[in-house]
Image (tube, rainbow, N blue to C red; front, side):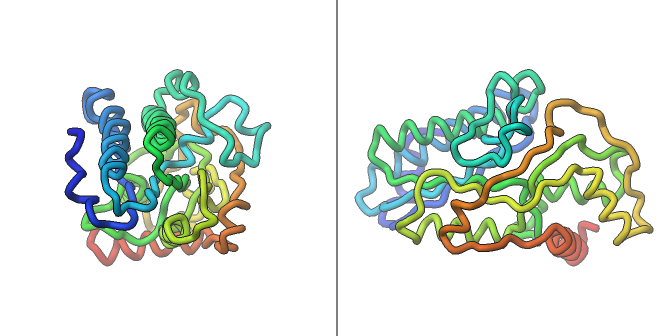
Length: 257
């Protein structure tokens, strides 16, 4: 989070992908989630602005910076013009969404101020095979459900998207000169109760939960408009069955299930 710490890393490169952000706070919310999300993003952008070689920056934001608002159902399909309501996020303790929303807004402010060519990808809930040594935060939820570690599943309605489609969208965002602004990257929206039923049908011997955790604020029915991404050549997204199969097979191969 130290300004200038990315100067050397971005010097001499044509494009920069900034993809990392904390998901769950550990202790102090401001110090462990909000500050890294916001200051980390702005520091990357300021370093890019100092480099004469960087032509474009692609930032991974989230549909969480779009869909958390009281009118998400009536406004659906939600698109790039919509933003999550910070008061809504605070009311329901949706701190990841709060951090992503503030960080993205600040990224746009800094990009405009410093003349940076910024394109933002807004993925929904990313599922698929592991790309890292340890499961990501989103895959840890599926792992815990499959292992019966929790008595309930999340009371959440969310779009799901395969990691392959997220990668393809990032490549297009960087390489296609037509790409601009925000890009919603999401497949169909499901409630976690539907995901659990799909998993039970495929893996009946696993001790999957039968009840919902009842948490409020995250279950509003909605849909996402992906027409902007499709206009750039990504015509279809992989389905939920393929996402879950690829995810679970990867977890099994790595010894996490």
